[in-house]
Length: 241
Image 1 (cartoon, rainbow, N blue to C red):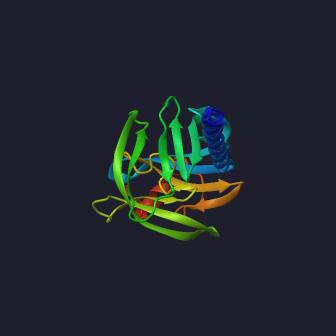
Image 2 (cartoon, rainbow, N blue to C red):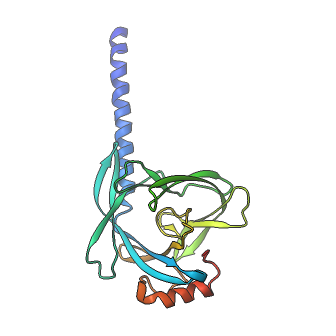
Image 3 (cartoon, helix red, strand yellow):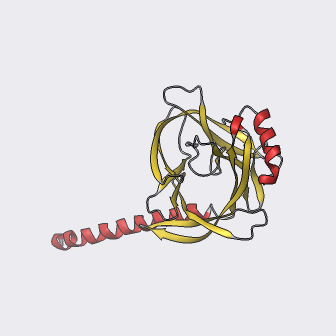
């Protein structure tokens, strides 16, 4: 009986590992389903002399369809760049696992961490981001300055403030659990210094508003709204221009 048991044990272990792996993939797929019916509305702006707004456009991001890369299940991410949503444009692959969100840009194969919502106050971490402007990868060391739960449109949401590990005088970014960042959706820690940037305007889940930027009166801005956007920037000191 012992030889038989020994011979069968590796097979049993193999089945057990496969079962665990299957459960993990199933759990990740379930977390990915949480991304369904979410839309992120982000304004991209450009600045001229004296930090005057000279351009504004709004992108409406959403998921549509599934994909698999290296055994990981992803959602396909698209965006509209007009208010009428006439044409969708493919952006890349996005997934959620263990309270983190990951992203693979289009025409890329490497995965980047968008958010780690499991971070706690006092944690330090390396944030790797992909710079679309020059197709380069960068890393910045950050610390979690503050974590608190706030009421956001009637929901109790975890808010995470990021700062330098050497000085917490400047908050680089603020994340909202399972929603996104004040600065947009991608590369939120890194803001190019060439007079361009992004602002997170709104987020919807099942057509219900779950995030609303209190500094803006609407969820869509374009070049015809340049003067309005410029006025908001100049009268509000919370924007780091």
